[in-house]
Image: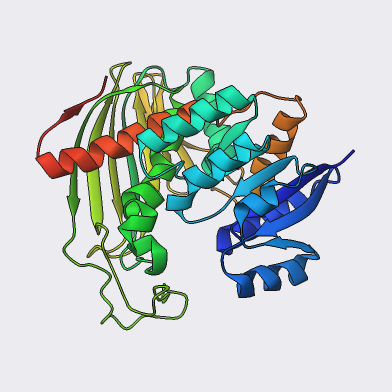
Length: 353
């Protein structure tokens, strides 16, 4: 019997989920829900889905529905996920898990009580680059990883719309972009827990609507038709973990740099590694410093990335594998993000319990 899946929020990110489900012969794309009826009907027609809802509770009342992807803006992640879990559905919730750790902890509690799977959309965990690098880490090629750097910088990449509205997004580049690389580093290191955070955020450039943009750059407008920007331009933080390692993170929407950057660097006692975007390894051989580049493509490929994530979700539901992106990891990450924003506000380090 096929697993019947619904999509809550049929905006842009939902398309990646939809195509992932369509690749699975054991899944039936069953229902769509969105508050924007025009978009809802367009997506329903495009993908042949006839069960369309503007009220999430109406969709969740379908007893035959087994699972949902929550692809809404961030402020709706918690209420939609909690409603779905209480209705007895398995949930794949897009990142970030919620607006804050309090919401995330409530989501996990409901998931635990319901006995249903709550998986968080940490899609970078399912990447080809992550798989290869993790093989080197798991075989102790790097030794003890004691320091790491994660960078996700855009020069002029404020998406505007709800991304620039803190009431719906929960924050700016830290919660939108930084979440990817912070989680990736933490996953690669085996999931150490954060114990302290020093963070700083800046709102100096805003969304720079005066900039003449080349084709392909963000041009989205707010849902009200008025430009807005209530989130940070840049966030930076030092995160100390319970295994003694430290992570330095930088994330920006708007920053005066030459070109966008997206990379992670890991520094260990036996070797180092960098994804930028190809994987490079650094160590020593016969007492000579050496650099290693694999004789195969190692940069993150988006071809099959979300399909890997969706397949993992379905396999977890079917009991074929253990979830590699559980709710507890989403809670841990939300605690880090909360601490960065709080540290930036009060001007000193935040210690986590």
